[in-house]
Image 1 (cartoon, rainbow, N blue to C red):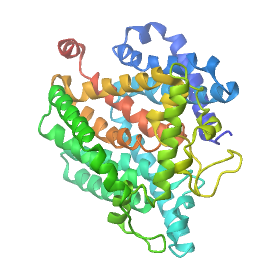
Image 2: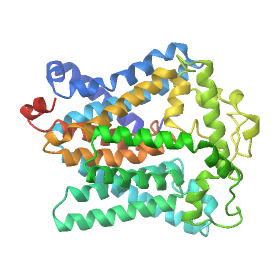
Image 3: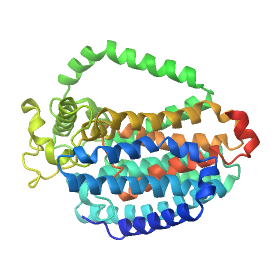
Image 4: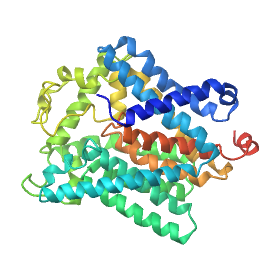
Amino acid sequence: MLRIPTEPLVGIALIVFIADFVRNNSNWRKGPLLKEHMWALPLIMVFLLTIPFSEMLLVSLKFSFVNIAYILVFYVFLSRHLREDPELFPTLIALYGIGYILVTGYGIFRFWQWEWNPVVVRGIFQPFYKDHTIFGASGALIAGFCFAMLKVTKVNLWRIIYIIAGLFFTSAVLLSSSRAAFLSLGVFMLVLLFFRINLGIRQLIVAVLAVILALMALYRPVLERMQHTEFASESKQPGVMERTKSVVNITTDVSNLERMNRWLSAWRMFREKPLTGFGPGTYQFVYIPFQDPSLITRLTVHDHGNVPEGSGGTAHSEYLLALSEMGILGLFSWLLLIGRWIYISFACYSYRSRAVYVQTAFAALSTYLFHAFFNNFLTTDKFAFLFWGTAAWLIANYYTKNEQNIQAAN
């Protein structure tokens, strides 16, 4: 499939990037952003290195090309421009937001046409967004950006605009009925709190380790609680709290059961090919034999050419998808890049004049870093721009300060 017009436009941007790289090679090599771009190199290399081991060579070639193109255009290329003009990114987000508002209005109109039947929410944002979860993840990231910008903006008029915009995009997340997107806003607020209390990288590591140990200690009682938890029946339209609570329902919620089925399939695929994986982009074609019979539901796919209504998708986890398709190096390259962004945001930011912008970018990114445990959208053109573009703005703000302060920070 070729997505029109976005993928051809990204292809044109990629050609421009290559031409600029060839023409200004010395500037690329001397620029302070070079070492930041190197943190993304392992991920790019893993895409390329695992292609020869793929179960479906042509699928992996296209999947890798598309993902590498998004990284080069929206992260590497855009960050160079944002370093020279960091105020460009809020303008890009504003333009994207205007389009998002129009799509929201279109979705509400279609929702009304179907007499507000919650069953149709999945498709009311097409053809602009493939389904409601991508729409919700996009709204959560933009809402996070708007609310985080309140710490940056001192002009009262702009603060009012950001508050109104943030509330609108939050409402769009609720409209999407995406539970992971809604919960990601809670993670966003927690990240803002960490920045507010000036939590350093060491304290952050201690806090994360404490959470991991607590989860390990409470694993069995929580699992037993989840297995004996039931919520509203399908005949009753659930409210926001009921939908949020249903995240832990693994007894009667078929969506959660199918998600666990996909996760387990990805884990089993990794165990069979831990070093190379099955090849980039191949999960949806090869995972079916790895499914657990005890997790079979009406959403379970038995033939990738005949997907049940309301199902589809791949591993439903960005991290497990990388693990199953590109092996341990695929996951490691992702965690390496994310770890670098965390370090930049929580460690040396006090040396930077635009530290608050770095925090703003990471706070917005945190919505998807959490959401990526439950879904994977980075091959989707519209969301790839939001994610990689925000990451580009993060590192661009980190290096916008003059060279003397950059050297002092390092």
